[in-house]
Picture 1: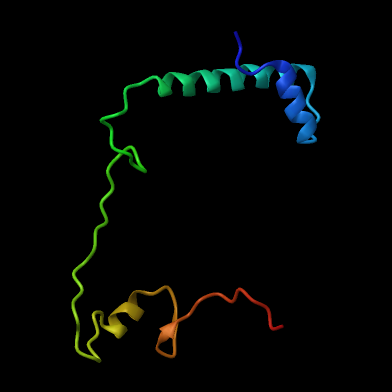
Picture 2: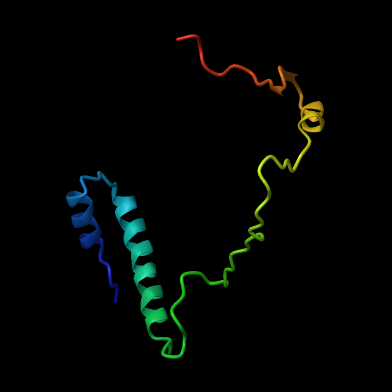
Length: 102
């Protein structure tokens, strides 16, 4: 027995103001029935010992060490970085204009 009937899909389509063809009603009824069946099967699993989680794979944040550097300390040499840029002008990166004059 189907959990979601074609008539229920038609009713939901009317409420949602969706114009579905006869073939679409049959197709969506079949898909929704499969989804409800899958959820029911998952609900049958013994999950009492499974802790709740937000992801299937464990996630770990990776942080760098928070090192305080004295003021004025540069990590990179400005001239060396600018020398590797495609274009530079007045000791800065030169980039294509993306906005008009207005």
